Figure 1 (spheres, rainbow, N blue to C red):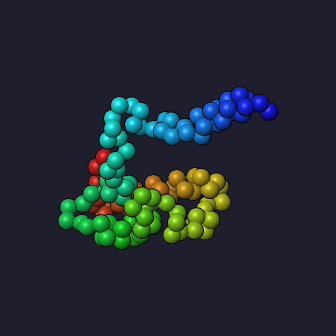
Figure 2: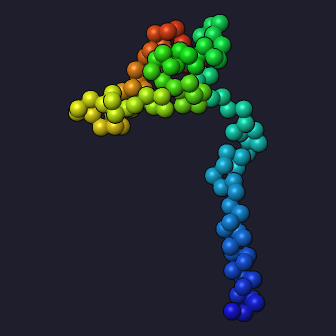
Figure 3: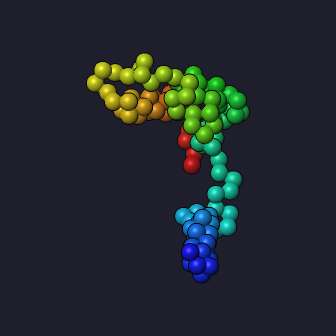
Length: 112
């Protein structure tokens, strides 16, 4: 292989491998985009409730203690809660809706 061919391949590969930022929010002109993003559970607000109590309430509602995915199935076994006619996806959706309704019944409001 000639030196010119090796050089061209190196340049093309370096361009392809340095594709950092492609599709990133910073490309939209907002240099602060993506910074200071609140975890999902922190959007659920209730007067006088601290983060730890919010996590506990999430667990009571059948979710996890995770701030980012509180209505996920990390702490519960979906297959045990799956109804015979359901797929695992409909089970997950049903449990997420139940989690949201429980949080609302506990007095939380989703504030985006």
